[in-house]
Length: 194
Image (tube, rainbow, N blue to C red; front, side, top):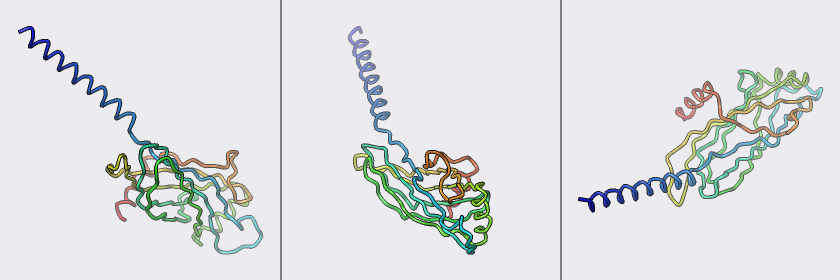
């Protein structure tokens, strides 16, 4: 009888130790979300006396994969620029794969919708303009050759714009953070409709 109890106690210890080991491995291997930062931003021609009826937004977006053991498969990335509640422009970055511990730079431009250009231009000339950038996509992690399920990513950031049409804060960079609940609901509808 005593030998049976010690065997069960030994078996319980082995199972407990394996459980603790599995928890430690899961915590060590759990992938981190990618980081999105707008490192360069400008709206050329916004501060000139030339009153054109259209404009464009030039941006440089850094997409950083902080994982040293997981690559990331991105679906199309949707970028939307808002001035107040008005969507002044949008861009789709095609799907791609990003390797482990890599950073991808996306340098592109967005045409500002004509009906919002005049209001945005006036706000820039008064140094009161602020754009909101919303980013949404779905990603899959690739760890040790195994793809994870899809994870939805929703990020947003506010870009204060000076009279020169460039970022007016001290850092000159805008890190996109987790989106508000209102934005998550709106972007989920957008992703489901595509």
